[in-house]
Amino acid sequence: MLVNRARLFHAAGVSIPENISQLQARIAAACERANRSPAEVQLLAVSKGHSTTAIEKAAAAGQVVFGESKVQEAKAKIPQCPGRLRWQMIGHLQSNKCRDAVQLFEMIQSVDSLHLAEEISRRCEQASRTMPVLLEVNVAGESSKFGYAPGRLLEELESLNALPRLEIHGLMTIAPYVTLAEKARPFFRELKELKQRCEDRLGAPLPELSMGMSGDFEVAVEEGATIVRVGTALFGERHYHRS
Image (cartoon, rainbow, N blue to C red; front, side, top):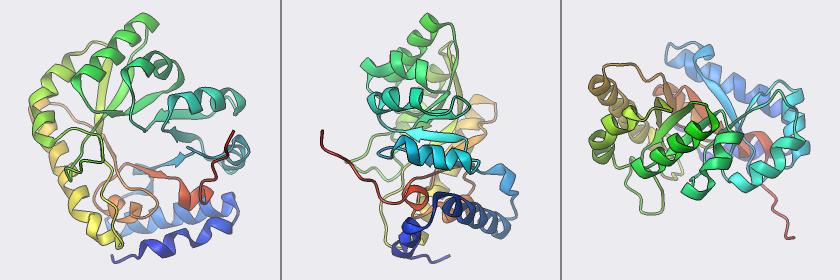
C-alpha cells in the first residue's frame, strides 16, 4: 500500500472526535486487507506536547489509552485528566526517572537495556507491583534512536525474563522516517520475525507488537501491529509554549 505521509496530516484541523473515527476506520480497513480483526489493534493516543483540554476531548470521544514520552510532563498532566484514563510510557526512560514511571504508568514500552530493566524491577519491588513492559528494538540501527540491537536483545532475553517484577509482553520499534509508508514495511516485518525468535527462545507467547505511528500505522497493522502510537493524525501538530 503506497501512502504519501504528507496526506496523512491533512486532518489536523478536523475535530478530535472526527480524527479518532477516521483513524479507527483506517485501522479497520488495514485489518481487512490483512485478514485480521480490528479488535486485535489498540489505538494509543500520543499526547506528548498536547494540552489536557485536547486529552479530555479525546477521552470524551471514547479514547482511553494515552502515551507520554517524558516522565516530568506526564507527572504534571496525568493528575489533571480523567481518572479512568490509562497511561503508557513510550519515550526513552532514564534510570533516575524509574521510581516516578512505576507510579504513573500501566506499561513501559521503551525498555532498551538490561540496566534499565533491572532498575524498573527494583522500583517495582519497592512499590509492591509488577510492570508489564515492551522491549524497544532499534531495527534499522539508527544512531539517533534508542533501542536494542536485535542480536543484543536475544543475548539478554533470558536475563530480562528472569527479573522478578517485570512481565515481558512484546516488542516495540520506531521505524525510520520515510516519505512513503510502504518503505517502512521491511522494518515492521523484521520486528515481527524477531518477536517469533524471542517466543521460541522463551517458550512463551509475546502478544504485543507496538509499531506504526501517524505516517505509517496502516502498513504496521498489515504486518501484525497490535498497538499503533498515533499523535499528529489524532491531535494535530504539537504546539510547545515557552515558559
